[in-house]
Length: 208
Image (cartoon, rainbow, N blue to C red; front, side, top):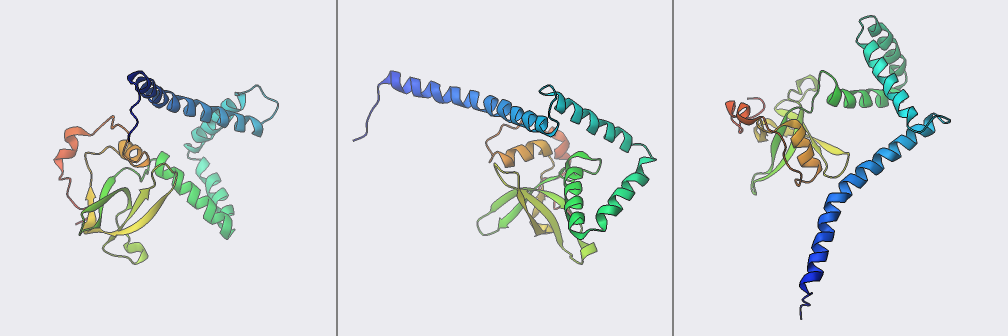
């Protein structure tokens, strides 16, 4: 027989979970920031707590400013040539560099969310980001590279997908798409490209 709790107990449980939903993101965010600051402080010991974060941010910003100067390019080329001579270091360096450039440089690659038909029989679709439309330079035709981030994880898988199975989601903002995928579809969609995406068919393949 199913136990029926009094109304006041159900109200308390309901309020508890509502409070948990409200408090947990704030607490986890603050706790993560504190852990990050403590870890950065351990890299430069003896400083006032939090000062190491400012030093690192200032240093990285200064390097970014210097890197925009034309004369800095030969220096970067020299540094990259050093890493390219060591096979193992080259793989790590180029992979990390390309990953950061995909999100933060002028040649961002995670800018076009797509929907891929995984199983035509059932109509199951999967959301991802097209990272390279043309693979002919590596001897592959008719396929495009699509990256599928994992939900609640900082990882994902890369698939080579037939172009006719890819639907470009023009009206889906890339930032919202990434949040939507990583959160498992439970996050709210705050922004949209609106009518701009309606200028193109949402069922248009990436490449004809």
